[in-house]
Length: 165
Image (cartoon, rainbow, N blue to C red):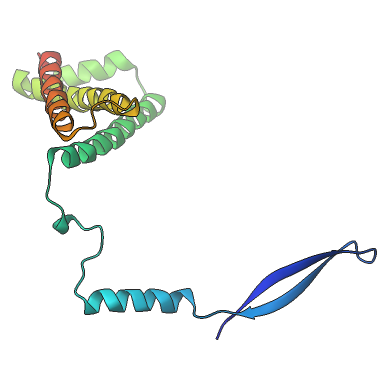
C-alpha cells in the first residue's frame, strides 16, 4: 500500500517562524493499478478506444472541421517556411521569380499550383467567418450547419478558381 504525504497544519511559532507538521495517510491504490484495471475491463468487454474514428459516421461538418485545422496548420507551416527562406536564402524576390519562370512548367501546372495555394487560404478564411458567426450564436441548427458548410466549400472553389486564372 502506498503512502501519500499530506501537509495537515501550518504552525506559526517563534522558533522557527514557519513549521510544517507532516503526516502520512494511506492511499487505496496507485494510478498505475487503476489504469491497468481500466484497460483490462475495456479489453474484456471488447470496447474500442474512445473516441475512435470507426464508431463515427463521417459527415460534412466533421470533415470540414478536420480540413479547417489542416489548412490552418498548412498555412502556418507554409508562411513560416517562406519567411525563413526569405531570411536565409541568398538573392532577392525577382531572382527566384525568374527561376520559377525559367522552369517552363506550362499553364496547366501553373494554374494547378495557384489553385493549390489559393484554396487553403480561401477555405480557411470562409470557414473562419462561419466560425465567427457561430461565436455569435448563429447557424447552429443542423440544416444551417450543412448549408453554410456547402456554401463555404462552393465559395472556396470559386474564389480559388478565379485566383488561379
